[in-house]
Image 1 (cartoon, rainbow, N blue to C red):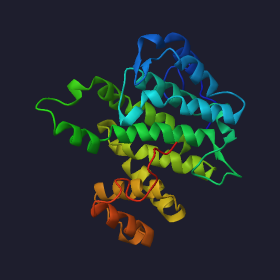
Image 2 (image 1 turned 90 degrees about the horizontal axis):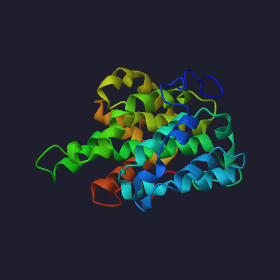
Image 3 (image 1 turned 180 degrees about the horizontal axis):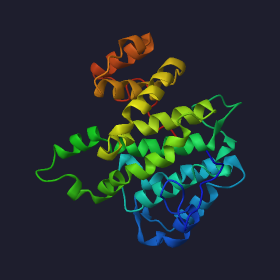
Amino acid sequence: MTSENQESGGYTSDGLPHHQALLDGTDWASLGTARGDGGFLPAALARVLDLNPAIQIRAISELEPVCHQNSFYEATLPVARYVAAVLAHPSTTTVGPDRRTDPETGNPVRATLLNWLGSLAYDADDECLAIGGRGFNGDYLADYPEMRAFRDHHPAFYRAVSPFLGDEDTDVRDAAVTAAVPLIEHPDLTCHRDDVGRHVRRLLTDSTDRYSRSRCLDALRNWGYETTALETAADIAARTQHLRGGDWTGGFIDEPPF
């Protein structure tokens, strides 16, 4: 794995345009977000690659209007493409504050970006599509082009995420695994299920993170695998609470994982 996305004619090694080309070539002010147009996005996205991790983390939090209340907007896909394109940039190896980790050790900015992208992928997964479609007589995605466009980009997002499935940093590795799970629902990516499944089992062996464990256990069940041997007492308690109508998160954090 290289330290930075390789350019070839302005494109990265995962097939996405280079992040600077995306930043400079997008009419951000013409794109809608939950809080008006996206005119604020170029500055925020540029700060994602700042040398100060505290500034980077704040910049990522400024992207919330493109995914407000688990929804997709005109600006969502362009921002997601930029995030995917910078995942391998050296600036994302900095370590910043993160509420899911020990404040004294922090969390790599790269892991925070992977969590951000993965959260979007879960908001557009097959389960969300099925739930949304129940309220529509026609084609749900035809009435929701922003989600459809995001789902169509799953192969490019997976190519950007997959190099980190075996990353040396635990936080980055686990964030990549959790993000990959909904991405491989794409018909062109189901061939990667066995490989991702191996990483999922490794995460379930090593990690105690409630969010990641719940997502990974659900994935294995959906793929038809037996998960009893992989579940801990905390997993069972969280699942039981969810089935009884408790917190929809199944026991993990209430807010998205970024």
